[in-house]
Length: 68
Image 1 (cartoon, rainbow, N blue to C red):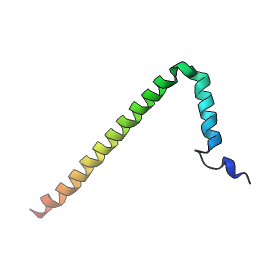
Image 2 (cartoon, rainbow, N blue to C red; image 1 turned 45 degrees about the vertical axis):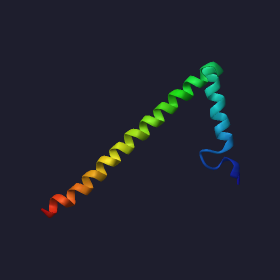
Image 3 (cartoon, rainbow, N blue to C red; image 1 turned 180 degrees about the vertical axis):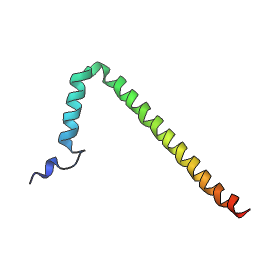
Image 4 (cartoon, rainbow, N blue to C red; image 1 turned 180 degrees about the horizontal axis):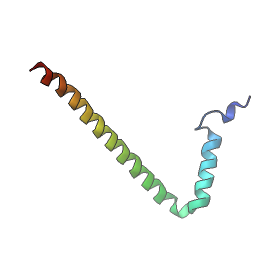
């Protein structure tokens, strides 16, 4: 029963990921990698929220058209 290793975002896993990233990219490129990941995540959030807004708009418009 090793509770420390359960789940995906445990401290050991995060440290291991950080070490691998540092080895692959080096400390000089780390800020660039973080910036690129941040842009990717924000673009993904923007795209998904836009698609949800379009679906909600279609759902609101559909009952209005059926009533006519």
